[in-house]
Image (cartoon, rainbow, N blue to C red; front, side, top):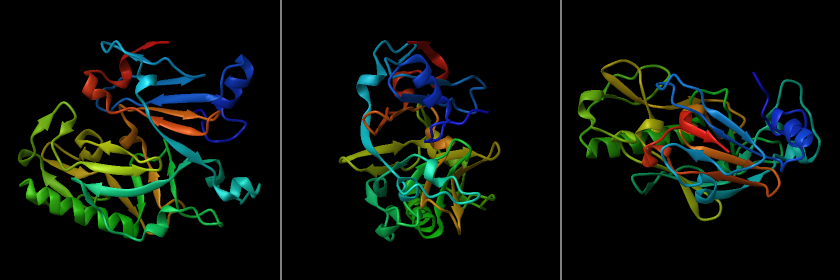
Length: 259
């Protein structure tokens, strides 16, 4: 294991200091179905993934990284590491272009460090506070019915599951309603079926988001949603950069040619 949080002892911070390169790093997590290694880059691009011949670094959408107030104030609480997470400002969630309705105040980080949107490579799936989760599931189920996806009994810990035979497939995975995460800077991060769904067996696909009655971040983006996106954490410019799904380029995170 290697610590990659927002702290001075993290692997990327130490490597950036040791080798005198810009303090930025990028992750590209492979799909668990690939059974192949992903990649971590330290110091910035270019980023190339065979057979796609262009530099992914030049194609990233960007949004500001924001600080948790606990870190700004130098507060440390026993057993809590939220102040060392990476946060961004999410402005909305939509399903098939329709906004999901929930209490927008949950998207802001409060002075006690709760709320907002953070990242976690140790969480398998994105964790949502209950009210956001329930609204997302409701919106997704309605959009799925419009697409004639057949709902089946839920499989814990997932709240919405479907008959896989009622879902077509494409280069971006199961053809299901798009989930768009609106980001500060008037941009969005789109999740296609490969990142929004998980196969629990050969017959059932479930919405790959998890409910948490108590969670420090209102939205805690997990590794499944990050798979096969190049995600750059630029600690110099305080920006997060996200590629579109590498599936659109007929490549994956396991195909890097290095820099």
